[in-house]
Image 1 (cartoon, helix red, strand yellow):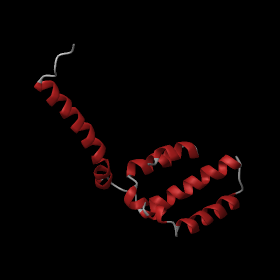
Image 2 (cartoon, rainbow, N blue to C red):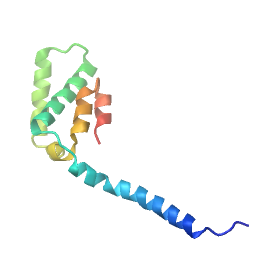
Image 3 (cartoon, one colour):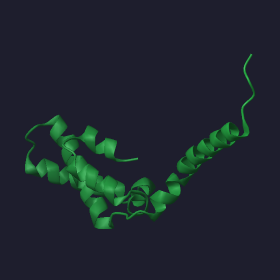
Image 4 (spheres, one colour):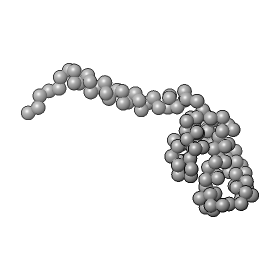
Length: 112
């Protein structure tokens, strides 16, 4: 037979649960208060991602292919509401991580 929890144990457990819930709930607030990348930085991210994708398909793509694909991606991104959120949703840390990535998989792991 187990003994009932003491008041201190209940308060400690409640405190831990409240801290965890507070941390999880505060993530959107912390994200909104963080520094965000500029629209130019977001455009550079898009270009970098296109480069990773094209290099995954062809290790040494022609420069004209890269330029064409980047232009196509910019055109698509200009009407994409998800991409439009980049300067207000991504953090500078996430953008810098993505820019340092060596391939598309690493790039994607940097983003939320």
